[in-house]
Length: 108
Image (tube, rainbow, N blue to C red; front, side, top):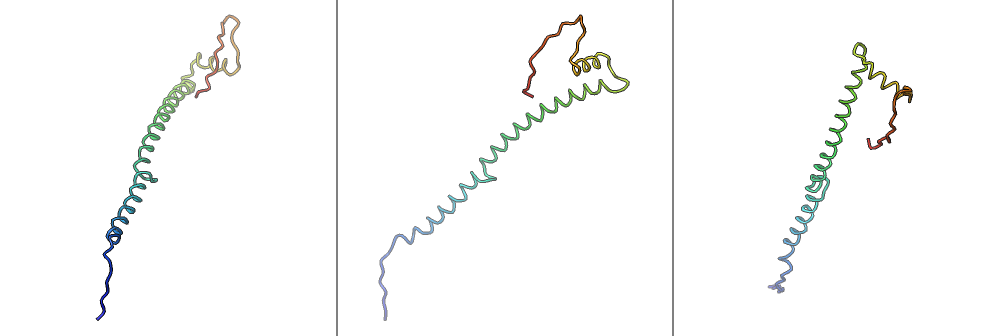
């Protein structure tokens, strides 16, 4: 009869918990920092708010341009609007007018 004697090792009991900690750490890290993680969600909301602000500004600009174009359509052509556009395009003014030069705003 063979008898086998061995020491009781405590490291064997730590293998499963250590693997569990590694497993949860890996997936926990990627749940927060991954491409579709929690941090990415906050970045996406910030980007959405920024782009929504730009969209609102562009929509307001478009509405203004559509209103100005509507004034130039046939039948509703306003003489003042036509005169303003012609002077602006040709860079001209009447002799009895005072012209005030303003710097061009390039922020748009």
